[in-house]
Image 1: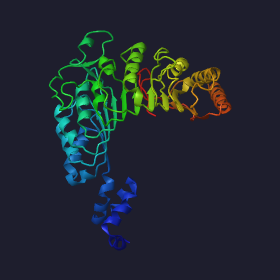
Image 2: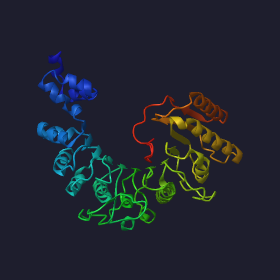
Image 3: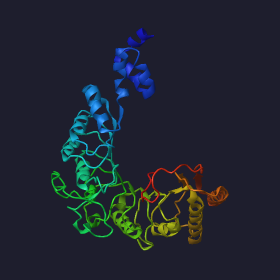
Image 4: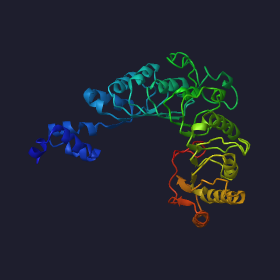
Length: 410
């Protein structure tokens, strides 16, 4: 069999191996050295390194030539006080095919890493997450914005727990609600296009950007309302800031929504919108087709929020809630649908689907009440000729703190 395999042209061998999953490719690679060489592109297509030590060992033991096959890279620095950028720079520069990158950081990176992102011509998806407590180890908005703006053709950007800089937000220093801030990041060099304007709203100046997710991050920069918008965003997912009251989070999200709304087709909400966000005749999100409501959304305000978005051509509404909130969530959706019937056929005339799914939960729930509520909602949807789906409602252990405001991806 080995002889027959080796009589195949190299191109055909690569095509065969390319259809294997990683586990099968790893097993197959043990046949002999030539087979291992054919399996290298699959074995190194998706790389996950959980610590800076793993990153250093990878660079020490893996031939540099293998890095050119990396398309997806997930690097974590948990447990490290502050990762030195040299190792990450070496790996990024050796990975020209990199298309998706996840950085799970433990605080900041040295700004020398920024320039390496300019060489990642194939990078489309970038996720940057601060896994540390931002009060102790913050991750500067200036660093993150400069990195994102340096990627030649970035399409999707996801940011989690990014800290505001005193350079851009001096008005927050020592003031309630005492949002964690970064000091001393003025030495981050000016960006060739953005200059020193490296506040979060400058992300809207990235012309290639199509999807933007920001969670657990202060969104109160007034420049969101005035920053030039060069990107036709299609999807926006905004989570609330745990350090801000609900009313402030609402105003901040509404300001961003107003800035990028004309191009959005998908939107995820973690906070309610003001009923007076728009006049009934206005269309705040004229292209919106999909609306997602996160578990942290106050369910009693669904009807008012939907009224604020009534000018949008929403076709699908999805809602995620905690297991102990299912009955309330289904009841709130019922009230919205009743309001829709009362308003007449022109009110959300394009709505065709409502889905409910359940986030992780560890609270005690009344199974009978949940089943009644979900059946009532599904029957109501059926009567209105709406498609609907309610996910498996068995509660799961909740990971993390429910008090932390955040949104959930679609």
